[in-house]
Image (cartoon, rainbow, N blue to C red; front, side):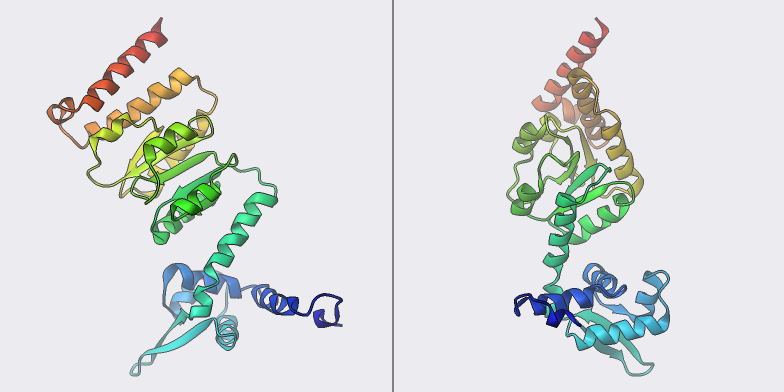
Length: 273
């Protein structure tokens, strides 16, 4: 008996065919490799996928080609060099993988903290995901619709690029303060006015894996601290960042910076009383 003999609507057989293809061990991994890294040569795939043999890789590539999800392109005739890439049908599977990830986050029990990565560049969020996913559950968003669809009470820490269209970082931080920790991601020369945004930390691009891990871990380690302690630590983090970029003279010309320093003095005095 096959699934075609089961008492289910005939139109669902096509979905079962797709699931049967994706249930093969290496097929979804190859599709995701091509999705996130672009065109790959045979050796690139062989090196990038641990434990797969040359024969199994070759057979799986043939299967995916026959299914119309990838294409083989000759790059050089002499010496012969070929690359594999997704077809339009293969690229159309990207939102399916993302929907599956969202379903897992919503319906399968997890004991790990959840991090929301928000950046318009999918390559950037994939890099961050690779940095964080061995320690945390990671959710990604690439526009304002995805961001607000995926931001809920599961989220423990948000890493938000301030340039993401449709999102007002200041407004979001004010809204999310009681729900999660917020880390803003800024460019090389961020506007000093951002020192007044009440986020918990700011990361300046480009940063490395260790910096991201340290910032997230620091926020999670202080979830039970007092409101005063949280505010003080947040202002100190923001002040430290901007003092590493701009001179004291430049910053002291900024009302936002002067207000932040004044507020920090008040908090330190309150804690010492």
